[in-house]
Image 1 (tube, rainbow, N blue to C red):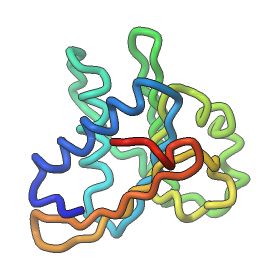
Image 2: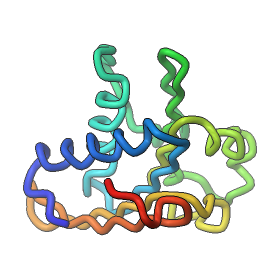
Image 3: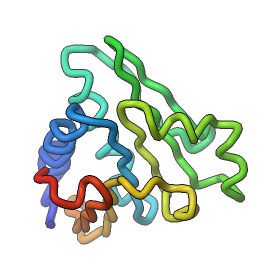
Image 4: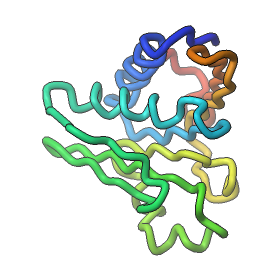
Length: 147
């Protein structure tokens, strides 16, 4: 799928928000630095919590985890970039986080062995300064879903 601009990225995020509001969802995002992972996540979180003004949605590259909660819903935003091994995820409550409403994981391909079988994977590829090719893979319970 070609995302020609940030508007297309937001449209994709909105479509996945609709799916995520129905059931627990893990979304894994992979791609080079600057490929659009965090941009997608910002649109996703703002649309999931529609009406709530969230001033800042930083990438958790250094904090490793950002948690967003509102109105009984939780989004856990992980960034695996700086992690050395999957055992570090235990301290970040990862096992429980994947059962919350939504778990968003940047650089998830570093530790595929700990990812749940039920997940959505998005791979971002830089095509030009503003456009991205994305490959979306629906796994487990999402395999036959429409997004």
